[in-house]
Image 1: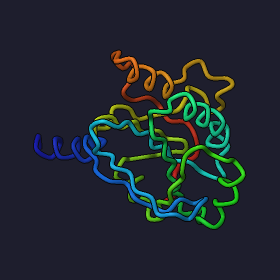
Image 2: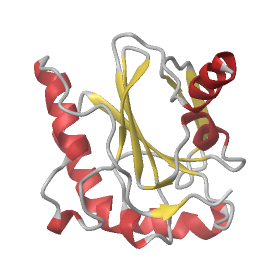
Image 3: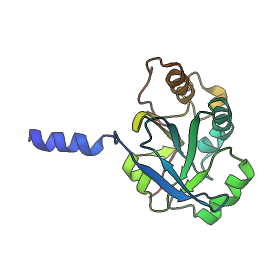
Image 4: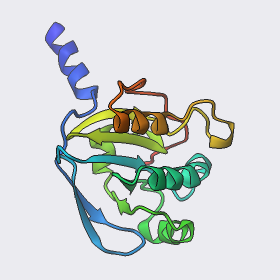
Length: 176
């Protein structure tokens, strides 16, 4: 019984080490690749939706974070099975994001990271997931009292201890 419990805990845990993320940018159509295992790099992977109001409400905030934390590589991931890449493309083109949004058509990365909703953010530093959770404490950042992702990135930049490693995710379920 204890072995079964241990197996379930390991199966439900977020991965601790990652390698390469590759995919097609929905806006440019280019194939891109990111070395998530790069010990010198920090990446933010954030699952986004073209139809989720919570995801949409966070777009401008994510663009500001991308501008503020230029040393961090932001990558959006689109994994919803009920939104084709062709349907999502015009939305992401209109939003003029300062980071790519890769298609995750079979939700392989969503499954691997155990992403549940949009926007669900993952911070990968030195090749390991150091934070996963919401971008902020509200479905609308204008009403948020905590900006989790910003605080985590600021802590990493300053070398301070992270206040959060996991927070609640608000938004629309990722359809698989």
